[in-house]
Image (cartoon, helix red, strand yellow):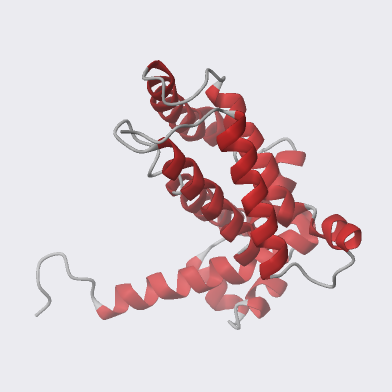
Length: 213
């Protein structure tokens, strides 16, 4: 008998399958766009019969929204070290490194999000003005607290977030441009390490970040 709070095998299988579908759907939506993606292509990417895909996600819109929600959940969790008693230098470095790692490991996720924004965010409009706005406001208050403590120079926190998003996500969204300029076939350890180091330096030095304590 399963203990209290335990996940039953059937429910665990469902969750694992849903996650597999979400990850498989990212490149399909990234490459074909929402309009161009078909349930048949999405099912094939997940190695599932089309009927099985409909069992988990009844419509393309439902699957697309689930993909977007999954991407945002991962991205928003990257701010978990931006807390009042945190060290600003370590918190910003962790955030930048996490965002760059996501751009490297899940570039298609970033492209799906970028395409949604370029479409006017029809599926994410309420989220952008709700959960995202609330999170940025919460983390901005933390940064304002660090500024008040003299741990960093005065900056407008929300615009700082915009700058970090732009710098880190460009390595996923505009990888073709970066590869062309660097004359490489793919972005590897050297390119991401160099990019991460520079972004950290620009943010920490540009904001006059000083370690807590």
